[in-house]
Length: 511
Image (tube, rainbow, N blue to C red; front, side, top):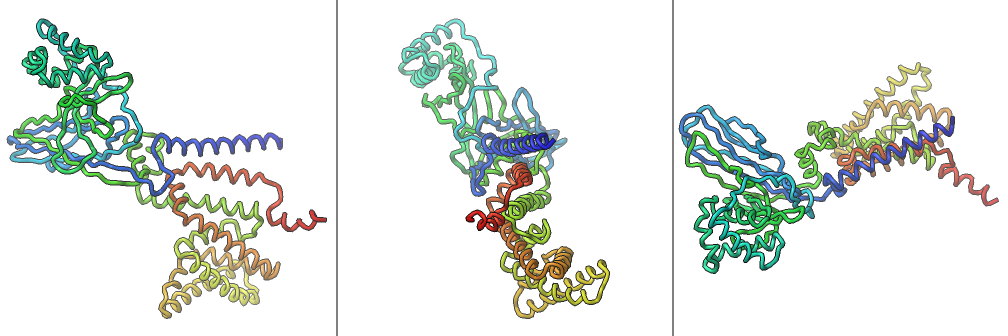
């Protein structure tokens, strides 16, 4: 039976360790959480402004929204349009914001703002979800003959899709040097302009491509312009080309806003519509970025966690999550070191009070309250009172002590005495009662040993709980409580000597 229980305990401890550490590693490696409380990430706030003049009837404004694209994640989308109703819809894989009003007259301005985070700095844009572009015109007749000639010239540089594409774009940009290019450009209106013609030629050459429009986030300011580029599929990723220069572009900071034939802006019931963009770059904590991007991607690990609670509740849990670490210190001090404390959880409660008063002021106030309380309690012991009235009398004494310390301290020009109210008076009253009984039964030495052990343990817990790194870990990785629980269970199964006992029996070993 013993072996069975031991095996169950080992399995339970292993599961707790694997689950606690595994979830933490997942949050760091996949969701982007950081172990450092000071780690920050760049955030780009992108604002799109739509201006138009309403005709006086019903109005509908539809704006294509920026897309998540691998390492760039769009989150916290906010809109501002007084008098308009807003909804977000997904159509043909494209997300659009739609503002409607039953009637509107005159000039109007609508704002749409989004925060863009980078989730993986070293990410490579993969070619997924965008392969099914619009139908591309099939060349026939003289256009096909000219295109084949142009493609033949382009392939002289190589058959790599990127090389062929760059060479085709270069030839198109120099119509004066190439007759086929010149004649094809005369027909560009049939294909939706130069970019449309380039995409048709690339399709004719067997190269998969798509037209994209967006903003590069490596700059900021008002009146940013959205520009169009060509993306060429190479293997499992896209390579972005500047059609005007026929060169590759580093798309690492490119915010995708439009793909192929998606419409950017549609205004029904208005005229003179205009769309402008501006960007601002800021730095915020890396874990806040991870939480925002996780919520944006509907991560269950974040959606069903402390981060989904109201801020007031989150602040309360920040303190509560620290208490198990205090319990771990008590277990270590009592079961491994052999330090006696007055009660199991009194050191934790005193340490929590120290967080409000500071360590030195808290120690001084605690010693003063308990010392005076013990003197007054010794007087009560001569009156042979029953237990409940005696403890109640001690509680009254404690409150009088609190009041006296506060008033005297304030009159002396110090606010330190006012901190005494942070001590839990019920717990202090019970502590004085227990120490008084201990004094009568075991003597003052045991009182000093337990009192000293309590204050030593409380001081260690205070140092741990007030550590900024520990606070960051408990809030950002609450699953580490499972690891704390596993360690407590391990210590709970330990039946060997404590450190103090090893020192006590050391002379026997020498003999």
